[in-house]
Image (cartoon, rainbow, N blue to C red; front, side):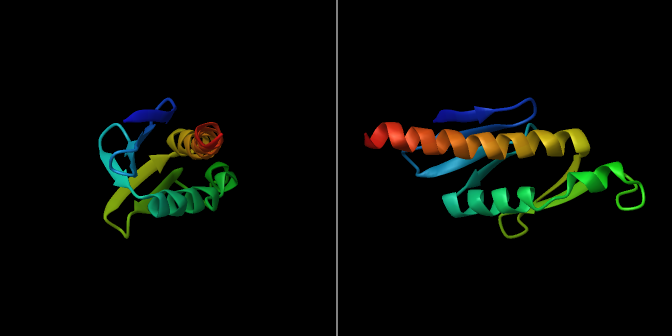
Length: 104
């Protein structure tokens, strides 16, 4: 397995042998197909960070995130959520660059 991207709280690995990804979220490691990784990206991109700074919209500053058809449940604070957004964004950039290099 090779590291695709590592942030402060999370690490995304790619397994060419198994043709999947692993997301290490410190307390748990999740096996993700590429479709599930795309679904994660979509969920994370649709979370409004602005709501975390408005006490009327998000009193506690937490986000509940369910992954892999509700198989995994995570409760993230604002800092963890920002870090996950960074990981997802840079991981897809890294995956695209890796794809370009290996096909050239």
